[in-house]
Length: 264
Image (tube, rainbow, N blue to C red; front, side, top):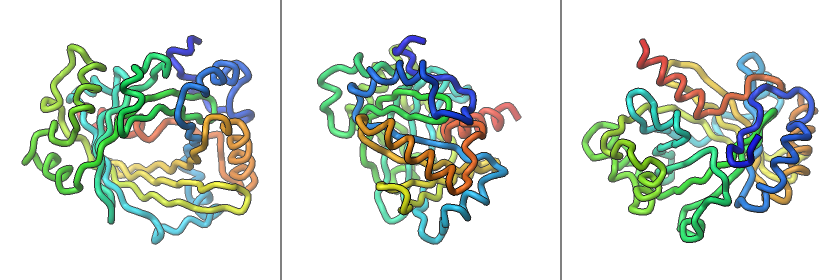
């Protein structure tokens, strides 16, 4: 597998988090990204037990609404481009343009130092993906205005984000031609566990069709990736959290839900 694709095998891995081949591929990428996020999706039949094992209290969670923007046939997602906006309880909203997979070595120097820009590797049981994203703050009200069709989509994004989007899709649709998909309702909770030296983030996503997914994650510096991955895996396994389920990401699940809705 070429490092440019930066996507590992998608099959679940009940043993090591990554295969030896994937570890070998990942190592040279780590020195070229800003951060690493370790993720695991809890299978449907293990979600309740995981919530109990980690003592997750929904009353401590922060509420978010996530809106995706794409064409009706979801062509952006198919090309590795994620465009989204979020409303957050008791905080301001934000918008993001993300490309994945992406070889971090191809990022222009000027973009790498831009405000709100970051490169990241997501590592999950059985695979990994490298991405680059450009984030900007936007008001919760603005996101709602766009969702209701009162304001043009481009108003959610900064000039730098519009350029980043245009560069990713030279012949793609204009931002204002995209449709707003969602919202997906999210409960986000940060927890401290005595076995870990960092916070664990739990996010339960409730999709428009009523289905749900629970993702657990921890962020770390690239040089800590392997040691933190071992610690997180041992912590979750020690608490009986199932790590062998389908590792479909939240975005993949959301887009599959939207695709099914259009097909229906």
